[in-house]
Image (cartoon, rainbow, N blue to C red; front, side, top):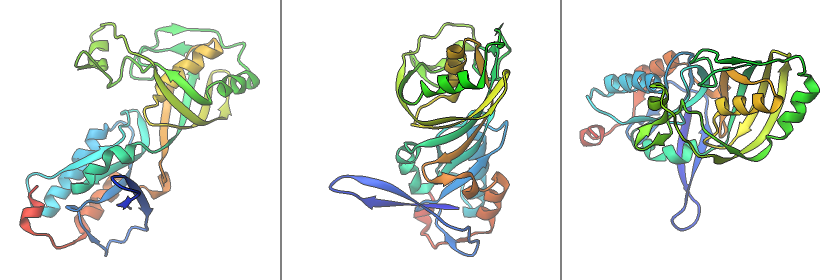
Length: 267
């Protein structure tokens, strides 16, 4: 389990400090003042699915019909891994929490592209991979270290003319998205074959790993699309610090609650 604190850092400035703790079922939980939970998002679930499940558990535990529960940093349904869920007053910390550096492990299929840059859509083009070598891949990855410009996927939640880009893309409409400046702190090859590579990436907020797969494929001259993605770290929170969704629900259900006035609970 994870808990969050606000620490003063000069006039008008606050820094979120994340403290890792062993989950202690006997410790009192204060969902109103705010709990910060680290959850391992399952494959196929949307981030909203996770929030909905945990919000339901909190509502039942507190005996109320409405309560604030949110998350810091969306994961696509086809991705798994670290997802930060916040309750009560801790929802005010979302912006700070999701601004932390993130680490991913991504598998990229080479020799084929898809419109969504992942498995959400069907392959639309194929390319040769005979020229791909481990040395070439490592050379190409070096180009992506540091500050880069990245155009987000059309199948993304970026807003264009007040609508989500994916809404237009799924209707076959063209979407004009501007490049964003991002920072890739680390990128390394962990598994290699001509048809598929696995990389570990440490990057800044806002990085689309699907778009990185597209760009790496283009740089290799083979095309590429994401076939697996696992977020292994958000800030200082790693996979080993996460609960399963069922584990988080069980913790919420069994937790001893800090005493709160009824007015505080009914947000």
